[in-house]
Image (cartoon, rainbow, N blue to C red; front, side, top):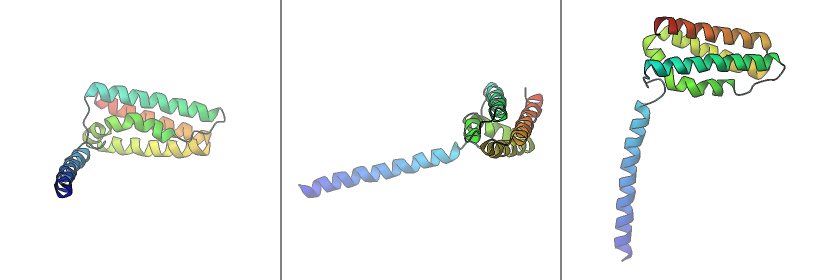
Length: 133
């Protein structure tokens, strides 16, 4: 009887491993950089990013460091970055650079650098939205 149970468990485990293979294939296909969102989703997500960057900049200007600015932006960016990258690769890179700069400056409490990164991000997003309303 133990041999039969082992065969059943082995069969179930074999089925699970093939399921996990299809899951990892699906995950690779839908990475944030490959996901294409519709225009309304992109416009809304980029708008929220501008708002988030402004809030981070204001917080740092008031004397409080922000250690998770990049994570806050990533919430929306991960939903739209594939579309931005596909449509405007140069603007995509500008946004990525601005997110990194904002994250670093906000964590350091550098008011001037945070404000510049926020402005750079907003400008890059405005440039994208001017081409893809």
